Amino acid sequence: PPTHMTQHHLNLCCSFGIPVIVVFTKIDGCPPHAFKTSKKEVSKLLRAPDVGKKPYAVNNEKDIETCIGNLHVLAPLIETSCVTGEGIELLQKMLYALPKRRRHEKKVNRPFEFLVEDIFNVPGVGGVVSGFVNAGELTVGANSHVFVGPTDDGTFMKTAAKSAHIARISTSYVTSGQSACLAFSLNKEMRKKLRRGMVVMKEPPTSTKEFDAEICVLKGEGTTIRKSYQAYVHILNVRQSAYARNIELLNNSSDISFPTGRNSSEEKKEGVVLRPGSRAKVRFEFASRPEYIRPGMRMLFRDGRVRGVGIITGVPNMVS
Figure 1 (spheres, one colour):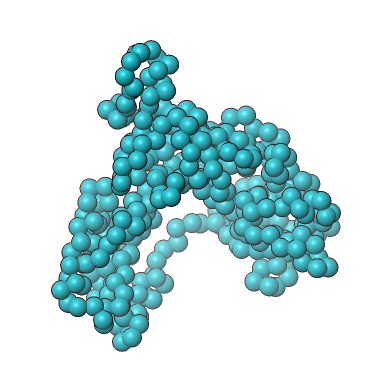
Figure 2 (cartoon, one colour; figure 1 turned 180 degrees about the vertical axis):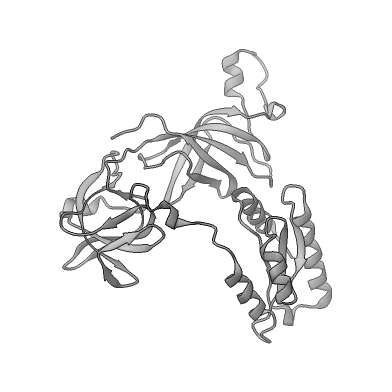
């Protein structure tokens, strides 16, 4: 049967506009009455007003064609069994038929942006980073100068991208949409500063410790978010704790709670509380070090369980 995590996954998919496909596994060993109950409960979750999807059972290829063009309203339900092989072929065809959500080829003309996801120290080569080319293009070589960072003090290290590998094959050119490894000309001290969550760019970038975001608190178990609330923030490849320094509610005055006692404007500001379903503009501050972020990036924050999602609207106090 669906759990609280099923509800969280559905909420996240709706918040980020991700199509939903429900796969029932191990149907060969599930009693008919339990399977019927599970399908009924999942369908109820999908039809809920905050999800708004219509469950659609996929039994043949024609059903797949029907779903592919209507994933914004339909949620395909596929029954599978790895023991008997039932439904596996249908699931594969459904996955192969899915349209692309990201058109990275359209980002080739943007400034080069490489997201660092892992760090390696290769003997004889030096510092190597693996990650994803989020935008732009780069031709590597001794004269290919790039900026890597931000470091703990918010600055960026200027270096050269000596070589690149894609799927263990050496290449001299990387472009947006590719996963690649880049090798840098860094000395021992600079190599120690490399970490996950950095970016590699051609132009001198800026870092910041504060950012503004419009957030939506996901519906679920009761949680209250007020000033100085601390959560773990995910922004693309950036993962770090952050504090809520200021909260302004967006068209949700009914969800504001004020402490009893004095009724000054300062007291009201201190007492803004966000509850599940609230929308607000929040000024976040990273707890430990500056990061590279820009307006338009999507974010997710959690404190144990996922609490909300949002989009970055502004970045004050940029550090070169």
